[in-house]
Length: 347
Image (cartoon, rainbow, N blue to C red):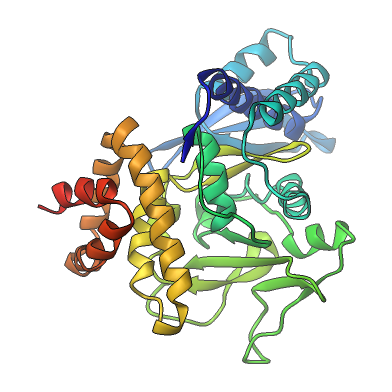
């Protein structure tokens, strides 16, 4: 693990602020209207409200309320909204980050992620998980990982319940992939009557998997209506994707995405490492290596984040805690620092 220079970290923070504002402005275009907020399950969300043909009121979802969207609302009301300069500024910051050594996402994967972002997948509650998220989290924390990050598996997770919490959101995943003209085809499941949860380019390793938390111990694919497809239920996933954070995928350009909280990502990796079969030992080692690297950074820079994530994990039950305890000896072999910090929380 290598620390990014402070100048690079500062540029990345500025990029995130500008990207959030630009994404919101691009969503609403130049439609006359106003910003409104709604409180849903204790969280405030921004919408852009305008009148359509016939005087019908429309609302476009922008995102959870934060400083960047507050600033955009202020600028909009003052008449200073301008998407063109914002886009050029974002491109300039991205170029500076590439020159400064930020970790890049491979071009084919980044193109797919950008297509999903443009289709509104992340506005509609999608969360980028897996190794691509690990790369993004390194940039978010201001470090470069030592381990190899080469993969073209793109994992996007979402909960079905957002359809009820925030009505009106839609992001057609099959159409978004088809519009990329990269040759994506649905991957048939073992049960021919089950809907697909994966899309793959024939003859290549490029693949998109849709995931969702397990509900009531069901393992069959779960329909995600707002995505126009289904997702594969996975255990422990609900913990991982709760309250995600905004971040950026960087390659030749930039895409705004949601990723898990870094501390939850690390603890989730420890949990699932113990669920791997004996034949998947390399994947188990990869899980624990990623967890160790994240925890080393977090223990040094943001120990409170680990404590909060641990409290949430412990609240899931004693079986979750036992899984972490069982993994500690192996984690200690990989990183004594990461293991020591966790032992202090386990008690």
